[in-house]
Each structure stands twice: as C-alpha cells, then as structure tokens.
Amino acid sequence: MFKRQVNGTFQQSPTAMRLLEFWGPESLLWATDYPHPDSIQPNSHKVVEETMGHLPPQVVRTLTHDNAAKLYGVVTHEVGQELAAA
Image (cartoon, rainbow, N blue to C red; front, top):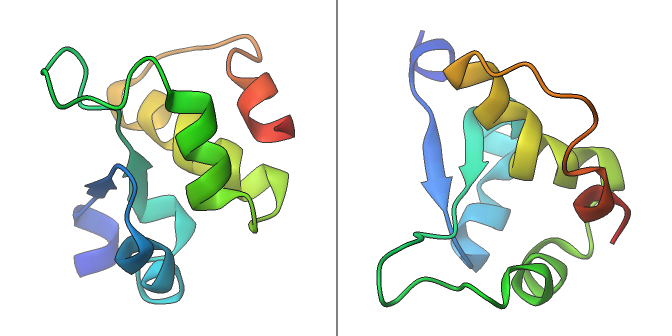
C-alpha cells in the first residue's frame, strides 16, 4: 500500500539512487526545486547526468518525466525524451 500511495521527490541525491530498489522507479520523481533560489536550474541537464547517468535511459525518463505526467494527469507528446537520451 505504501508504494501505491506515496511518491518521493529528489534533486541530486545519492541516497535516492540507492533507494530505487526499495521505492521502485515508479514511485520517485526528480525535481529541480524551481523557482527557489537554491534550485539546480539552469544546470538541470548536467545534474541529471551526474545523478542518473548510470541508469538505463527509460528509467531516467520515468524519473524525470513520466511519473510527474502520470501523477498530475498531463498528456505529453514525447516531451523530455532528450533527457532520457542524455
């Protein structure tokens, strides 16, 4: 029930990467914390590569795009695919 009803967010967290097996990639959402002053913008592509570069491209896409789109009911047309290919 916990995994079905709870989502976690992270920015640049080695801990979140280690917890992927527990949480499952469907329960985590990557965040930039924009527009707060401590946001990782405008370096988001670099941070994604540093944080998730070891993961398969589809898992990166799931974390950076698909999960948020699903959670908020946003229909997309392959937006964010360039992040998954990075």
